Amino acid sequence: MKKVKIVVFVPTTHTQKVLEAIGKSGGGVIGNYSYCSFLSEGVGRFKPNEKANPFIGKSGEIETVKEDKLEFICPKNKAKSIIKVMKEAHPYEEVAFDIYPLLDESEL
Image (cartoon, rainbow, N blue to C red; front, side, top):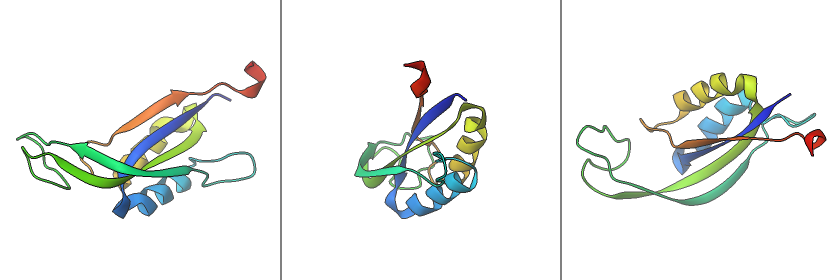
């Protein structure tokens, strides 16, 4: 089964909500374990334009915010539905995330 790794950046105030949504939707399953993820802390930086409706900050001003980088895997065929749920739980109007294809150990 093909898997992908999804990495998403979340303000620390919403980390648990987003992690719960990811886990409930089937993200983060590794063998007999569920809700698996890795979290690292950092600072996000952005400047909303005049058309933006920012959750944090003001249009035209550079903002920095404490964020968590969440990493988890999921089956490729479930990725779209998990991303949809992840975005619904996330407070930002533009959710920053990456998707990485993964090799299975048998492919090495």
